[in-house]
Amino acid sequence: MARIAIGGFQHETNTFAPVKAGFADFEMADGWPGLTRGDALFDVFAGINLPLPGFIDQAKAMGHELLPLLWCSASPSAHVTEDAFERVAGELLERVGRLERLDAIYLDLHGAMVTEHQEDGEGELLERLRRIVGDAMPIVVSLDLHANLTERMVRHASALVVCRTYPHVDLAETGARSAELTDRLLRHGPLAKAMRRADFLVPLPWQCTLIDPARALYQAVAASEGRDGVASASFAFGFPPADIHECGPVMVTYAENQRSADHAADALIGALNDAERDFAGRIWSKDEAVAYAMATGETGRPVILADTQDNPGAGGNSDSVDLLEALLRLDAEKAVFANLFDPETARIAHEVGLDNSFERAIGAWCGSPDLEKLTGRFRVLALGDGSFKATGPFYRGNHMQLGPMALLGIGGVQIVVTSRKQQAADQAMLRHLGVEPSAQKILALKSSVHFRADFQDLASEILVVAAAGDNPVDNAALPYRNLRRGVRLMPLGSAFAG
Image (cartoon, rainbow, N blue to C red):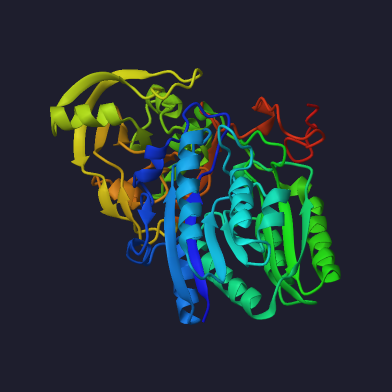
Protein backbone atom coordinates (compact mmCIF):
# COMPACT_ATOMS: atom_id res chain seq x y z
CA MET A 1 0.00 0.00 0.00
CA ALA A 2 1.33 3.43 -1.00
CA ARG A 3 0.40 6.88 0.25
CA ILE A 4 -0.74 8.95 -2.74
CA ALA A 5 -1.64 12.65 -2.61
CA ILE A 6 -4.56 13.57 -4.89
CA GLY A 7 -5.94 16.88 -6.13
CA GLY A 8 -6.94 18.92 -9.16
CA PHE A 9 -6.85 22.41 -10.68
CA GLN A 10 -8.64 22.84 -14.00
CA HIS A 11 -9.05 25.61 -16.53
CA GLU A 12 -9.29 25.69 -20.32
CA THR A 13 -8.09 29.11 -21.45
CA ASN A 14 -9.29 30.91 -24.57
CA THR A 15 -6.75 33.73 -24.74
CA PHE A 16 -8.97 35.64 -27.19
CA ALA A 17 -12.00 35.75 -24.88
CA PRO A 18 -12.87 39.01 -23.05
CA VAL A 19 -13.51 37.77 -19.48
CA LYS A 20 -10.78 36.34 -17.21
CA ALA A 21 -11.11 33.70 -14.49
CA GLY A 22 -10.64 35.05 -10.97
CA PHE A 23 -10.43 33.19 -7.70
CA ALA A 24 -14.19 33.49 -7.13
CA ASP A 25 -14.80 31.57 -10.36
CA PHE A 26 -12.84 28.62 -8.96
CA GLU A 27 -14.71 28.80 -5.66
CA MET A 28 -18.13 28.73 -7.35
CA ALA A 29 -19.97 25.55 -8.26
CA ASP A 30 -21.56 25.48 -11.73
CA GLY A 31 -21.64 22.42 -13.97
CA TRP A 32 -18.93 20.92 -11.74
CA PRO A 33 -18.33 21.24 -7.97
CA GLY A 34 -16.73 24.38 -6.59
CA LEU A 35 -13.44 24.59 -4.71
CA THR A 36 -13.31 21.53 -2.45
CA ARG A 37 -10.66 20.75 0.17
CA GLY A 38 -9.48 17.76 2.17
CA ASP A 39 -11.67 14.75 2.97
CA ALA A 40 -14.68 16.38 1.25
CA LEU A 41 -13.13 15.23 -2.05
CA PHE A 42 -14.22 11.67 -1.24
CA ASP A 43 -17.88 12.64 -0.77
CA VAL A 44 -18.51 15.55 -3.14
CA PHE A 45 -17.09 13.80 -6.21
CA ALA A 46 -18.50 10.31 -5.68
CA GLY A 47 -20.09 8.99 -8.88
CA ILE A 48 -19.29 12.06 -11.02
CA ASN A 49 -17.81 11.65 -14.51
CA LEU A 50 -14.51 13.35 -13.67
CA PRO A 51 -10.99 11.89 -13.55
CA LEU A 52 -10.56 12.48 -9.80
CA PRO A 53 -13.34 10.10 -8.63
CA GLY A 54 -12.23 7.55 -11.23
CA PHE A 55 -8.74 7.63 -9.74
CA ILE A 56 -10.09 7.45 -6.18
CA ASP A 57 -12.20 4.36 -6.87
CA GLN A 58 -9.44 2.49 -8.71
CA ALA A 59 -6.64 3.42 -6.31
CA LYS A 60 -8.73 2.41 -3.30
CA ALA A 61 -9.51 -0.91 -4.98
CA MET A 62 -5.77 -1.45 -5.30
CA GLY A 63 -5.35 -0.85 -1.58
CA HIS A 64 -3.60 2.52 -1.67
CA GLU A 65 -4.03 5.22 0.96
CA LEU A 66 -5.18 8.53 -0.52
CA LEU A 67 -4.26 11.92 0.93
CA PRO A 68 -6.70 14.57 -0.36
CA LEU A 69 -5.39 18.04 -1.24
CA LEU A 70 -7.92 20.24 -3.09
CA TRP A 71 -9.81 20.33 -6.39
CA CYS A 72 -11.30 23.25 -8.30
CA SER A 73 -12.25 24.34 -11.78
CA ALA A 74 -13.58 27.45 -13.49
CA SER A 75 -15.63 27.66 -16.66
CA PRO A 76 -13.49 28.15 -19.78
CA SER A 77 -12.69 31.82 -20.32
CA ALA A 78 -9.81 34.17 -20.93
CA HIS A 79 -6.64 34.00 -18.82
CA VAL A 80 -6.62 32.84 -15.21
CA THR A 81 -5.67 35.86 -13.14
CA GLU A 82 -2.29 35.84 -11.45
CA ASP A 83 -4.04 36.17 -8.10
CA ALA A 84 -6.23 33.11 -8.72
CA PHE A 85 -3.37 30.93 -9.95
CA GLU A 86 -1.05 31.86 -7.10
CA ARG A 87 -3.73 31.34 -4.45
CA VAL A 88 -4.83 27.93 -5.71
CA ALA A 89 -1.37 26.68 -6.68
CA GLY A 90 0.11 28.05 -3.47
CA GLU A 91 -2.42 26.26 -1.28
CA LEU A 92 -2.13 23.00 -3.21
CA LEU A 93 1.67 23.01 -2.95
CA GLU A 94 1.58 24.05 0.70
CA ARG A 95 -0.68 21.07 1.44
CA VAL A 96 1.79 18.76 -0.31
CA GLY A 97 4.66 20.23 1.70
CA ARG A 98 2.86 19.45 4.99
CA LEU A 99 2.61 15.71 4.29
CA GLU A 100 5.06 13.73 6.41
CA ARG A 101 5.32 10.64 4.21
CA LEU A 102 4.40 10.49 0.56
CA ASP A 103 4.97 7.87 -2.15
CA ALA A 104 3.29 9.40 -5.22
CA ILE A 105 1.11 12.29 -6.42
CA TYR A 106 -1.88 12.30 -8.77
CA LEU A 107 -3.29 15.54 -10.20
CA ASP A 108 -6.48 16.01 -12.21
CA LEU A 109 -5.51 18.90 -14.52
CA HIS A 110 -6.86 20.15 -17.83
CA GLY A 111 -3.71 20.94 -19.79
CA ALA A 112 -4.74 24.18 -21.50
CA MET A 113 -4.39 26.71 -18.67
CA VAL A 114 -2.86 30.09 -19.53
CA THR A 115 -2.48 32.66 -16.78
CA GLU A 116 -1.82 36.39 -16.80
CA HIS A 117 1.83 35.71 -15.99
CA GLN A 118 2.46 32.15 -17.27
CA GLU A 119 1.90 30.79 -20.78
CA ASP A 120 1.94 27.22 -19.46
CA GLY A 121 -0.03 27.04 -16.22
CA GLU A 122 0.23 23.26 -15.77
CA GLY A 123 3.93 23.20 -16.62
CA GLU A 124 4.58 25.91 -14.03
CA LEU A 125 2.60 24.03 -11.39
CA LEU A 126 4.42 20.76 -12.08
CA GLU A 127 7.84 22.42 -12.03
CA ARG A 128 7.10 23.96 -8.63
CA LEU A 129 5.85 20.59 -7.39
CA ARG A 130 9.08 18.90 -8.46
CA ARG A 131 11.07 21.41 -6.41
CA ILE A 132 9.19 20.22 -3.33
CA VAL A 133 9.16 16.43 -3.83
CA GLY A 134 12.29 15.87 -5.92
CA ASP A 135 12.88 14.06 -9.18
CA ALA A 136 12.26 10.48 -8.07
CA MET A 137 8.67 10.65 -6.83
CA PRO A 138 6.02 9.43 -9.32
CA ILE A 139 3.74 12.28 -10.43
CA VAL A 140 0.89 11.16 -12.68
CA VAL A 141 -1.43 13.70 -14.32
CA SER A 142 -4.70 13.13 -16.13
CA LEU A 143 -5.50 15.64 -18.88
CA ASP A 144 -8.32 16.76 -21.12
CA LEU A 145 -8.35 15.76 -24.80
CA HIS A 146 -7.93 19.49 -25.63
CA ALA A 147 -4.75 19.86 -23.58
CA ASN A 148 -1.91 21.82 -25.17
CA LEU A 149 0.88 19.49 -24.08
CA THR A 150 4.19 21.26 -23.45
CA GLU A 151 7.72 19.98 -23.13
CA ARG A 152 7.78 21.24 -19.55
CA MET A 153 4.67 19.22 -18.67
CA VAL A 154 6.19 16.06 -20.16
CA ARG A 155 9.53 16.70 -18.44
CA HIS A 156 8.16 17.19 -14.93
CA ALA A 157 5.37 14.58 -14.93
CA SER A 158 6.22 10.92 -14.63
CA ALA A 159 3.26 10.24 -16.92
CA LEU A 160 0.48 12.18 -18.62
CA VAL A 161 -2.80 10.37 -19.30
CA VAL A 162 -5.18 12.03 -21.78
CA CYS A 163 -8.87 11.20 -22.07
CA ARG A 164 -9.91 9.56 -25.36
CA THR A 165 -13.43 10.74 -26.10
CA TYR A 166 -14.99 14.00 -27.26
CA PRO A 167 -17.67 14.34 -25.92
CA HIS A 168 -15.68 13.50 -22.79
CA VAL A 169 -17.71 10.54 -21.56
CA ASP A 170 -14.58 8.69 -20.35
CA LEU A 171 -13.27 11.18 -17.79
CA ALA A 172 -13.76 8.84 -14.82
CA GLU A 173 -12.24 6.01 -16.87
CA THR A 174 -9.22 8.24 -17.56
CA GLY A 175 -8.77 8.70 -13.82
CA ALA A 176 -8.88 4.94 -13.37
CA ARG A 177 -6.23 4.47 -16.08
CA SER A 178 -4.12 7.05 -14.26
CA ALA A 179 -4.40 5.04 -11.04
CA GLU A 180 -3.29 1.85 -12.82
CA LEU A 181 -0.29 3.66 -14.29
CA THR A 182 0.60 5.15 -10.90
CA ASP A 183 0.52 1.67 -9.40
CA ARG A 184 2.83 0.40 -12.16
CA LEU A 185 5.31 3.22 -11.55
CA LEU A 186 5.33 2.49 -7.83
CA ARG A 187 5.95 -1.20 -8.42
CA HIS A 188 8.38 -1.16 -11.32
CA GLY A 189 9.98 2.28 -11.47
CA PRO A 190 10.08 5.00 -14.13
CA LEU A 191 9.21 4.59 -17.81
CA ALA A 192 10.91 5.95 -20.92
CA LYS A 193 8.90 8.70 -22.60
CA ALA A 194 8.55 10.14 -26.10
CA MET A 195 6.70 13.22 -27.37
CA ARG A 196 5.81 14.09 -30.97
CA ARG A 197 4.10 17.29 -32.14
CA ALA A 198 2.02 17.91 -35.28
CA ASP A 199 2.38 21.05 -37.38
CA PHE A 200 -1.30 21.87 -37.86
CA LEU A 201 -4.29 22.85 -35.72
CA VAL A 202 -7.69 21.14 -35.79
CA PRO A 203 -10.92 23.10 -35.09
CA LEU A 204 -12.98 21.76 -32.19
CA PRO A 205 -15.95 20.39 -34.20
CA TRP A 206 -13.64 18.08 -36.15
CA GLN A 207 -11.94 16.78 -32.99
CA CYS A 208 -15.12 14.80 -32.26
CA THR A 209 -14.28 11.14 -31.62
CA LEU A 210 -17.72 9.93 -32.72
CA ILE A 211 -16.60 10.47 -36.30
CA ASP A 212 -13.49 9.73 -38.33
CA PRO A 213 -10.65 10.51 -38.55
CA ALA A 214 -10.54 11.23 -34.80
CA ARG A 215 -12.36 8.00 -33.97
CA ALA A 216 -9.82 5.87 -35.87
CA LEU A 217 -6.86 7.77 -34.40
CA TYR A 218 -7.95 7.16 -30.82
CA GLN A 219 -8.54 3.50 -31.60
CA ALA A 220 -4.94 3.33 -32.81
CA VAL A 221 -3.69 5.06 -29.65
CA ALA A 222 -5.48 2.54 -27.42
CA ALA A 223 -4.32 -0.40 -29.53
CA SER A 224 -0.66 0.64 -29.21
CA GLU A 225 -0.69 -0.01 -25.47
CA GLY A 226 0.60 -3.42 -24.46
CA ARG A 227 2.65 -3.83 -27.61
CA ASP A 228 6.45 -3.95 -27.52
CA GLY A 229 6.63 -2.77 -23.92
CA VAL A 230 4.37 0.29 -24.37
CA ALA A 231 2.68 0.98 -21.03
CA SER A 232 0.70 4.09 -21.97
CA ALA A 233 -0.09 6.16 -25.06
CA SER A 234 -1.95 9.44 -25.24
CA PHE A 235 -3.11 11.87 -27.91
CA ALA A 236 -4.11 15.46 -27.10
CA PHE A 237 -5.67 17.44 -29.95
CA GLY A 238 -4.84 20.75 -28.30
CA PHE A 239 -7.04 23.79 -27.77
CA PRO A 240 -6.74 26.09 -30.84
CA PRO A 241 -7.97 29.37 -29.28
CA ALA A 242 -4.92 29.49 -27.02
CA ASP A 243 -2.28 31.86 -28.32
CA ILE A 244 0.77 30.07 -26.91
CA HIS A 245 3.95 28.75 -28.49
CA GLU A 246 3.15 25.06 -27.94
CA CYS A 247 -0.48 25.01 -29.05
CA GLY A 248 -1.67 22.01 -31.06
CA PRO A 249 -1.84 18.21 -31.36
CA VAL A 250 0.70 16.01 -29.53
CA MET A 251 1.31 12.29 -29.12
CA VAL A 252 3.07 11.11 -25.96
CA THR A 253 4.08 7.53 -25.15
CA TYR A 254 5.58 5.70 -22.16
CA ALA A 255 7.37 2.38 -22.48
CA GLU A 256 9.83 0.01 -20.83
CA ASN A 257 12.63 1.33 -23.03
CA GLN A 258 13.30 4.40 -25.16
CA ARG A 259 13.26 2.52 -28.45
CA SER A 260 9.72 1.30 -27.85
CA ALA A 261 8.51 4.72 -26.71
CA ASP A 262 10.02 6.39 -29.78
CA HIS A 263 8.70 3.77 -32.19
CA ALA A 264 5.14 4.04 -30.87
CA ALA A 265 5.19 7.85 -30.88
CA ASP A 266 6.55 7.93 -34.45
CA ALA A 267 3.84 5.57 -35.68
CA LEU A 268 1.05 7.52 -34.03
CA ILE A 269 2.19 10.94 -35.21
CA GLY A 270 2.53 9.46 -38.69
CA ALA A 271 -1.09 8.31 -38.59
CA LEU A 272 -2.18 11.79 -37.48
CA ASN A 273 -0.21 13.48 -40.26
CA ASP A 274 -1.69 11.09 -42.83
CA ALA A 275 -5.21 12.04 -41.65
CA GLU A 276 -4.70 15.81 -41.94
CA ARG A 277 -6.69 16.09 -45.17
CA ASP A 278 -9.69 14.32 -43.59
CA PHE A 279 -10.32 16.94 -40.88
CA ALA A 280 -13.03 18.78 -42.77
CA GLY A 281 -16.74 19.39 -42.61
CA ARG A 282 -19.38 21.89 -43.61
CA ILE A 283 -19.81 25.09 -41.62
CA TRP A 284 -23.23 26.70 -42.05
CA SER A 285 -24.03 30.39 -41.91
CA LYS A 286 -26.77 31.26 -39.42
CA ASP A 287 -29.36 32.13 -42.08
CA GLU A 288 -28.82 29.07 -44.25
CA ALA A 289 -28.85 26.81 -41.19
CA VAL A 290 -32.11 28.22 -39.84
CA ALA A 291 -33.75 28.13 -43.28
CA TYR A 292 -32.66 24.53 -43.83
CA ALA A 293 -33.86 23.44 -40.38
CA MET A 294 -37.25 25.07 -40.93
CA ALA A 295 -37.66 23.39 -44.30
CA THR A 296 -36.55 19.90 -43.28
CA GLY A 297 -37.48 19.58 -39.63
CA GLU A 298 -40.79 17.78 -40.16
CA THR A 299 -39.65 14.27 -39.35
CA GLY A 300 -40.65 14.38 -35.69
CA ARG A 301 -36.99 14.69 -34.72
CA PRO A 302 -35.35 18.09 -34.15
CA VAL A 303 -32.60 19.59 -36.26
CA ILE A 304 -29.76 20.67 -33.97
CA LEU A 305 -27.88 23.88 -34.72
CA ALA A 306 -24.53 23.82 -32.89
CA ASP A 307 -23.76 27.46 -31.97
CA THR A 308 -20.08 26.56 -31.83
CA GLN A 309 -18.55 30.05 -31.93
CA ASP A 310 -20.27 31.02 -28.66
CA ASN A 311 -19.55 27.72 -26.96
CA PRO A 312 -18.98 28.44 -23.24
CA GLY A 313 -17.06 25.17 -23.06
CA ALA A 314 -14.39 26.79 -25.25
CA GLY A 315 -14.22 30.22 -23.66
CA GLY A 316 -17.23 31.79 -25.34
CA ASN A 317 -19.44 33.74 -22.98
CA SER A 318 -22.73 32.13 -23.99
CA ASP A 319 -24.20 35.61 -24.36
CA SER A 320 -24.27 35.98 -28.16
CA VAL A 321 -27.82 36.38 -29.51
CA ASP A 322 -26.71 36.35 -33.15
CA LEU A 323 -28.24 32.94 -33.93
CA LEU A 324 -31.34 33.87 -31.91
CA GLU A 325 -31.77 36.95 -34.10
CA ALA A 326 -31.77 34.74 -37.20
CA LEU A 327 -34.35 32.38 -35.68
CA LEU A 328 -36.67 35.30 -34.97
CA ARG A 329 -36.09 37.15 -38.24
CA LEU A 330 -36.81 34.02 -40.27
CA ASP A 331 -39.93 33.21 -38.20
CA ALA A 332 -38.73 29.88 -36.84
CA GLU A 333 -41.34 27.81 -34.99
CA LYS A 334 -40.97 25.25 -32.19
CA ALA A 335 -37.38 26.38 -31.70
CA VAL A 336 -35.38 26.39 -28.45
CA PHE A 337 -32.28 28.56 -27.93
CA ALA A 338 -30.04 27.36 -25.07
CA ASN A 339 -28.24 28.39 -22.94
CA LEU A 340 -28.19 32.19 -22.83
CA PHE A 341 -25.96 33.29 -19.95
CA ASP A 342 -27.63 36.50 -18.76
CA PRO A 343 -28.00 36.76 -14.96
CA GLU A 344 -29.76 40.15 -15.03
CA THR A 345 -32.37 38.94 -17.49
CA ALA A 346 -32.94 35.86 -15.32
CA ARG A 347 -33.35 38.10 -12.27
CA ILE A 348 -35.89 40.32 -14.02
CA ALA A 349 -37.85 37.27 -15.19
CA HIS A 350 -38.11 36.02 -11.60
CA GLU A 351 -39.15 39.49 -10.46
CA VAL A 352 -41.82 39.84 -13.15
CA GLY A 353 -43.19 36.35 -12.56
CA LEU A 354 -44.81 33.58 -14.58
CA ASP A 355 -47.04 34.42 -17.55
CA ASN A 356 -46.01 38.07 -17.45
CA SER A 357 -44.00 39.95 -20.04
CA PHE A 358 -41.19 42.48 -20.03
CA GLU A 359 -39.28 44.43 -22.64
CA ARG A 360 -35.50 44.31 -22.56
CA ALA A 361 -32.32 44.21 -24.62
CA ILE A 362 -30.87 40.77 -23.84
CA GLY A 363 -27.47 39.15 -24.32
CA ALA A 364 -24.13 40.67 -25.40
CA TRP A 365 -23.27 41.91 -21.92
CA CYS A 366 -19.85 40.31 -21.27
CA GLY A 367 -17.81 42.79 -23.29
CA SER A 368 -17.14 41.18 -26.68
CA PRO A 369 -16.95 44.08 -29.15
CA ASP A 370 -18.49 42.16 -32.08
CA LEU A 371 -21.70 41.18 -30.31
CA GLU A 372 -25.01 43.08 -30.40
CA LYS A 373 -27.96 42.92 -28.02
CA LEU A 374 -31.44 41.83 -29.09
CA THR A 375 -34.36 43.95 -28.00
CA GLY A 376 -37.82 42.47 -27.70
CA ARG A 377 -40.79 41.77 -25.49
CA PHE A 378 -40.39 38.44 -23.74
CA ARG A 379 -42.99 36.34 -21.93
CA VAL A 380 -41.96 34.37 -18.85
CA LEU A 381 -42.95 30.77 -19.57
CA ALA A 382 -41.17 28.97 -16.72
CA LEU A 383 -38.84 29.63 -13.81
CA GLY A 384 -36.30 27.44 -12.02
CA ASP A 385 -33.65 27.65 -9.32
CA GLY A 386 -31.00 26.04 -11.53
CA SER A 387 -30.40 23.23 -9.05
CA PHE A 388 -30.96 19.80 -10.59
CA LYS A 389 -29.33 16.46 -11.33
CA ALA A 390 -27.60 15.98 -14.66
CA THR A 391 -28.90 12.96 -16.58
CA GLY A 392 -26.63 12.80 -19.65
CA PRO A 393 -23.36 10.85 -20.02
CA PHE A 394 -21.01 13.87 -20.04
CA TYR A 395 -22.14 15.51 -16.79
CA ARG A 396 -23.05 12.09 -15.37
CA GLY A 397 -23.56 12.02 -11.62
CA ASN A 398 -23.19 15.76 -11.09
CA HIS A 399 -25.64 18.13 -9.47
CA MET A 400 -25.91 21.23 -11.67
CA GLN A 401 -25.94 24.62 -9.95
CA LEU A 402 -26.70 27.20 -12.63
CA GLY A 403 -28.38 29.82 -10.45
CA PRO A 404 -31.84 31.31 -11.18
CA MET A 405 -33.06 30.17 -14.59
CA ALA A 406 -35.92 31.28 -16.81
CA LEU A 407 -37.64 30.14 -19.97
CA LEU A 408 -38.65 33.10 -22.12
CA GLY A 409 -40.89 33.10 -25.16
CA ILE A 410 -40.84 35.41 -28.15
CA GLY A 411 -42.46 34.55 -31.47
CA GLY A 412 -41.97 30.84 -32.09
CA VAL A 413 -38.77 30.64 -30.04
CA GLN A 414 -38.19 29.66 -26.41
CA ILE A 415 -35.00 30.88 -24.73
CA VAL A 416 -33.30 29.07 -21.83
CA VAL A 417 -31.63 31.73 -19.64
CA THR A 418 -29.10 30.84 -16.93
CA SER A 419 -27.31 32.82 -14.22
CA ARG A 420 -24.12 30.77 -14.46
CA LYS A 421 -22.29 29.98 -17.66
CA GLN A 422 -22.54 26.37 -18.84
CA GLN A 423 -22.78 24.84 -22.28
CA ALA A 424 -26.03 23.16 -23.32
CA ALA A 425 -24.79 19.57 -23.12
CA ASP A 426 -27.42 17.87 -20.96
CA GLN A 427 -31.15 17.47 -21.65
CA ALA A 428 -31.85 18.07 -17.96
CA MET A 429 -31.03 21.76 -18.50
CA LEU A 430 -34.10 22.09 -20.72
CA ARG A 431 -36.34 19.75 -18.75
CA HIS A 432 -35.63 21.74 -15.59
CA LEU A 433 -37.77 24.44 -17.21
CA GLY A 434 -40.39 22.07 -18.59
CA VAL A 435 -39.01 21.83 -22.13
CA GLU A 436 -38.98 18.38 -23.72
CA PRO A 437 -36.08 18.40 -26.21
CA SER A 438 -37.47 15.62 -28.41
CA ALA A 439 -40.70 17.57 -29.01
CA GLN A 440 -38.95 20.53 -30.65
CA LYS A 441 -38.40 21.23 -34.33
CA ILE A 442 -35.13 23.15 -33.85
CA LEU A 443 -32.64 23.01 -30.97
CA ALA A 444 -30.04 25.79 -31.13
CA LEU A 445 -27.43 24.71 -28.59
CA LYS A 446 -24.37 26.64 -27.42
CA SER A 447 -21.85 23.83 -27.66
CA SER A 448 -19.35 22.48 -30.18
CA VAL A 449 -19.37 18.73 -29.54
CA HIS A 450 -20.26 17.86 -25.92
CA PHE A 451 -23.99 18.18 -26.65
CA ARG A 452 -23.71 15.11 -28.90
CA ALA A 453 -23.33 12.81 -25.89
CA ASP A 454 -26.91 13.47 -24.78
CA PHE A 455 -28.64 15.03 -27.81
CA GLN A 456 -27.26 13.25 -30.88
CA ASP A 457 -29.70 10.35 -30.79
CA LEU A 458 -32.63 12.81 -30.79
CA ALA A 459 -31.55 14.69 -33.88
CA SER A 460 -32.57 14.18 -37.48
CA GLU A 461 -29.51 16.24 -38.45
CA ILE A 462 -26.77 18.28 -36.77
CA LEU A 463 -25.51 21.48 -38.41
CA VAL A 464 -22.37 23.28 -37.20
CA VAL A 465 -23.21 26.99 -37.36
CA ALA A 466 -20.87 29.99 -37.47
CA ALA A 467 -22.80 32.71 -35.66
CA ALA A 468 -21.02 35.54 -33.80
CA GLY A 469 -18.88 34.57 -30.81
CA ASP A 470 -15.40 34.41 -29.29
CA ASN A 471 -14.50 30.89 -30.46
CA PRO A 472 -14.08 31.13 -34.26
CA VAL A 473 -14.40 27.79 -36.00
CA ASP A 474 -11.85 29.01 -38.55
CA ASN A 475 -8.54 29.32 -36.70
CA ALA A 476 -7.25 31.60 -39.45
CA ALA A 477 -9.61 34.26 -38.09
CA LEU A 478 -7.77 34.37 -34.76
CA PRO A 479 -5.09 37.09 -34.30
CA TYR A 480 -2.28 34.85 -33.06
CA ARG A 481 0.92 36.50 -31.86
CA ASN A 482 2.70 33.88 -29.74
CA LEU A 483 2.12 30.70 -31.75
CA ARG A 484 5.29 29.13 -33.15
CA ARG A 485 6.05 29.93 -36.78
CA GLY A 486 5.20 27.38 -39.45
CA VAL A 487 2.08 25.89 -37.81
CA ARG A 488 -0.78 25.47 -40.29
CA LEU A 489 -3.76 27.25 -38.72
CA MET A 490 -6.22 24.85 -40.36
CA PRO A 491 -5.66 21.35 -41.77
CA LEU A 492 -3.87 21.79 -45.11
CA GLY A 493 -4.19 25.55 -44.57
CA SER A 494 -1.74 28.41 -44.57
CA ALA A 495 1.15 28.47 -42.10
CA PHE A 496 1.48 31.01 -39.30
CA ALA A 497 4.20 33.47 -40.31
CA GLY A 498 4.59 35.21 -36.96
